[in-house]
Amino acid sequence: MPFTNQEAEAAYERLVNAATQAGLSWLIDDVRMEIALRMQMEPKPNGPENEEGQSVSQQSVPPDVPPDSAEPAHHFSPRERLRVLVDALEAVSAGLTLSAQDVFRCLGEAETSSKSIVFEAETGGAEGYSMQAPKQEVLSSARKLADAFRCLKEAI
Image (tube, rainbow, N blue to C red; front, side):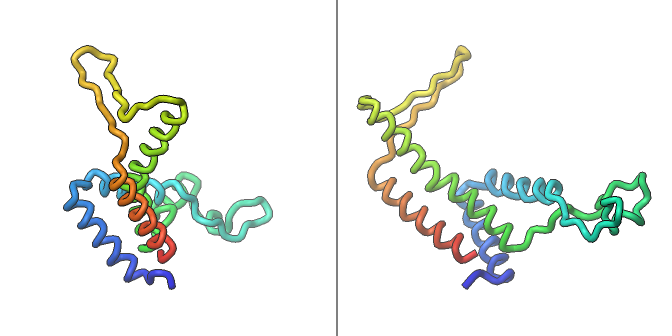
């Protein structure tokens, strides 16, 4: 049975608090920005149209007033907001680990026995970044986490 709006709102707040405590406040900021941008960009469904194809609701609006200037283009329900947050959390947790494993698996198939990748900066003085192949226990945890996210998405 899907979450009610109240359950979705409560789950959203709990996940925001947990992510913030885990040092992911930057991710929460990105999720809020994503929701705000989507609210501005997604068009409202058009109402009935007149003979010229103009929406009946737009007929009474003066030409110098932008349509829907006082309202967001789309209002996100608590369930939609929760889904955006869950997608983001999944991407930065299980998603990154499993993607890294795929990269190392491809390198292994290319007959490379590499267990790490080093990214070096092109500018002088800048430090590079080294990435190690995920350990088996990390992969196991990432798969369990991915399964938990899948179950959560089904409930949203």
